[in-house]
Image 1 (cartoon, helix red, strand yellow):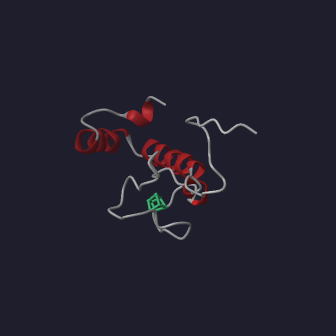
Image 2 (cartoon, rainbow, N blue to C red):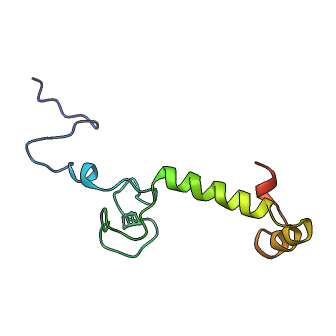
Length: 93
Ligand code: SF4
């Protein structure tokens, strides 16, 4: 076994880099293991009310697109002007 240290080495004896493996699957978790949306010292874990998985993100985006496309043309225009700087990103997908 080599004692060479590299950037990809995860020491198992010290447990120093094990923390990321214990954090929940959340799209808001940054590469530095910090929360990207809440002002908290550390991630709140599995039971956090704001935790969102990649699959949940895709699902909510699909619902958003479906809801906006279901609006009348006039309502879509009003929404685009009010919230999307005149753009209609739901039509481009
Ligand atoms: S689980 Fe909660 S605290 Fe942790 S990264 Fe996600 S939103 Fe932030």
